[in-house]
Image 1 (cartoon, one colour):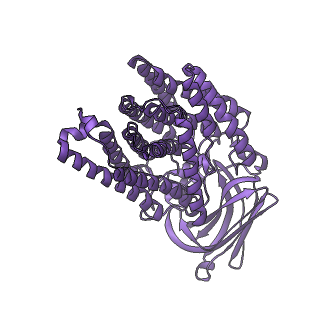
Image 2 (cartoon, one colour):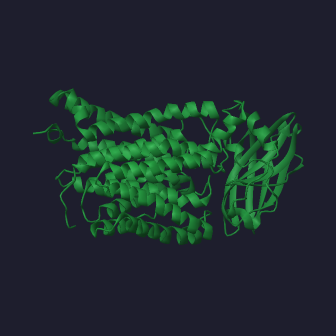
Image 3 (spheres, helix red, strand yellow):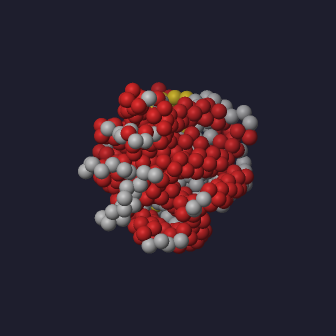
Length: 538
């Protein structure tokens, strides 16, 4: 009997690994909402604990399993059992992404975008962990194995689709045209891994449905702790098309076409009619559809390939695309609110009515005489609107016209002596109305790098289409400079670092994550190839 057949995972390892991985994913959504509502904080916040404690818990269970395997079958059996080896590797990759992320921030400043190499490395590691569990469950016959396989598939899919969390939470950092191509590529890669694990008739559809339930549970939890939930994923129909196409033997280009059409059919009307801010126009649909078709065709062609030649061609195509994106990166439209030296607190209240936002702030008496009002500022996805901020006594107020949809970040810009001081609140605008308030909102002194780049003139690129209707004042600062600041008073010293950390993040991430994703996809496929469950008509 081969080593692979001798080594089987105990059910308790699967349960603990599931709990840890799901905790990490839920913590990721919580962390995104935390930064959206509260800005940057220290490392030991609840979402970070959920993320790293979850991965550490899964790692501990897998390590204990590895020790048991080594005791019963020898050390060589640990690395000879592909699912176990992949699981251990994935946990290590995910855990090491934390200190790498910290080193990235020290070198390039804090970034507010998910598409940075350390963040994407963590996503890839979690995806590989799900693939490893999926591979281990593929050949199991116990009654609990079937639902566990669907949960493992949902874990793979959720990890992959987390790459678009900023679009799903209405904090877009790049042009909307990239939303569905990235989502399509990530979902397609995850779903083909799932189908490689089992020939059950609706394997991809079941995983997509379980993924939707998971996000609904996460959304319910975030609502209970008073954080905004992500939009529900709409992957079930594209997954159904993939299941049907695979069973009927469609060629990769036809599967990719059906998958792309289904993805756009559900996402475009849902986000445009029911969403809170992210919306697609004709250019997004046409260009995004072509990019989605190209990306998913590569994925399905790799899976359909009978030799490594197809993998080499697809890898070469991906490498060319990532190099092109790296050389001509689209600018990120992120900003990272809440960075800087502590400057006390303000009482803030924001009300939106008829598309006009009014910010009212109360400066503490102790610093009132030294504080000057500068401006009220609204930022969203690269667009900045500015207006006068007036001071009367210790109260400041200002009004701006905003689009009728979407989450905006409203700032009160102040001055104390030589120092710039600001405080902010997010407000979600729906049908021209919204409300946000805080009696004790923190204020801070922005780091020098932010202040210098806010004041630097530049040729502003085309404004985000999502904010065109109500744009009254042209942006006066780099929309992408605000996402690369130092930690506290850390100062950027060269324009090269600024460009790399802001404009280049998308290209660097694609150049970095593309090969990593393909490598993990290949490892997962090789692991799953010989572990398929017999075809079942269910």
